[in-house]
Length: 375
Image 1 (cartoon, rainbow, N blue to C red):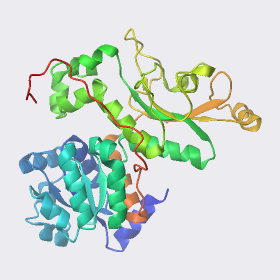
Image 2 (tube, helix red, strand yellow; image 1 turned 90 degrees about the vertical axis):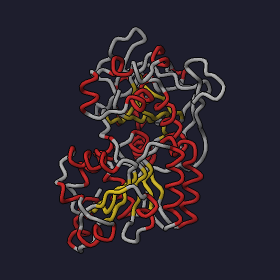
Image 3 (cartoon, helix red, strand yellow; image 1 turned 90 degrees about the horizontal axis):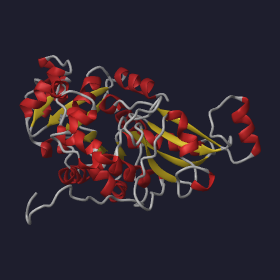
Image 4 (cartoon, rainbow, N blue to C red; image 1 turned 180 degrees about the vertical axis):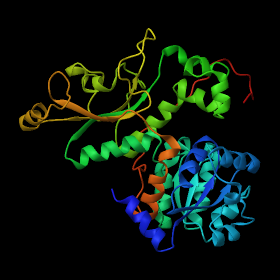
């Protein structure tokens, strides 16, 4: 990858990538923490329903107040500073902005933002994976019609999984399975925002200091987010989904080749070419060694004797048959890695993952009885 060198060239030319951010919550703040350190990226404007909260988050991540004191988007474009306001329509329409980052976490609003950005000829990086999981393929087609790039967000697990799948296929391997890790027990299905921190593993004080959203983090824990992200992965990587839903098989990073292989060979898969999620807890709640809770992975096949011999000769980890191996990242850095998407979209005109078909969606079941009209 030469993205860093390409960013340096834009700096030398006095022509940084100009970005507009919609939503400055946790993910957006993590991006801003790094964007403020990258000379080749200029955050021209931030639109948030609570501008004062956005300014507070900028201070929290280390921005000096004068850096986000631009009085208008025009002022920001001229001065190199950043304007913070509420008007997302003005942000999207401004001619100085090349790339819009949709980072609200509100899927209905996100689709409005993405479509409006296409209408104004802007590239879009969509952090709101809920919108991508259900409408990503349609949005990708709309982007193509508009002549712009639509991309998943690097740093989030779907885009990182797609990167590993792309690596495997580019190397000529058949992808047997791919996905992410998770902390999963069946009883977590009943978790609520009131109980999430005791299950998640952080105390309430730590959560509040980090401005962590209990509703969002509960969606991670109760299986909603893994299901949604797995649908997004399936749609972007052309993988199938389990016919009865995610199984959350138990295993660490080194266990993946044995677990994520077909059932006929001792694994958990209905067939090859599936998406799945690995749990870092046994069903009794015990942690597994070298877990991949925060990571992503791909399992690929050595389908010839020569390839299997290569695996043995170079001491590559495989399943017990020597046929399947894996590549993984044990961590994802969320918004801290989002500059990779900005650089890929802005400098190469290519997405860091994009839905290519509609192969999967997600159904929700209420955790308790709901009254008619209750939201």
